Length: 269
Image (spheres, rainbow, N blue to C red):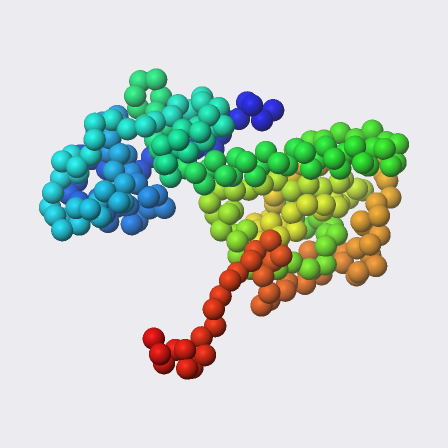
């Protein structure tokens, strides 16, 4: 399944580009208004070149100079049907943060960034989690389990984790806004779903007003008793609202290094 993932599955389809007659000042302001570190230069939808923030910075003392005067002819591009792993090699090989996606006629149809590549890598890890859980439950309960991808209501989720970290919630909201919507992993029960993986995602989405979420649903052929659900009962966790949000601490996956200055230190700088 992983080998079939294409650039078209992850690229941003709204192509932001600038014309070659843009001035350095206009190009700088345009890049600042986007999430990109560089923009394609195009005319009538066809790519002429690419300009980076670093190239514009070199010309910052010449705000009226035209972009066409500083770009090289042509640029590195990828095609929408290219394997996502091959595209990652292109970006790595040329040290690119983002690059245009161009179809066979030379028209720009999207942009792919190293953030999109990272997103694809994160999402590709999900099937391994699902298969491990499916095999474990099948063997433990001697039951056949089907896996289906569905959109499920958040209010039908039964959590199995009692705490989440506030800093991780902010991070998950940023990911969701950027398009990293990694599906949840849940187990279907009678009238609800037991949430196995994705507690931070669910709370982040709920705070954003999202009412439903993509999920990989494990569906046993008959009801099974889950140890994780029993543990949740013992912790008093029955709904999403029962999860405690930990403020003031960082998620264990995040290590933040700081140097606290004393008054003496501050006065000497």
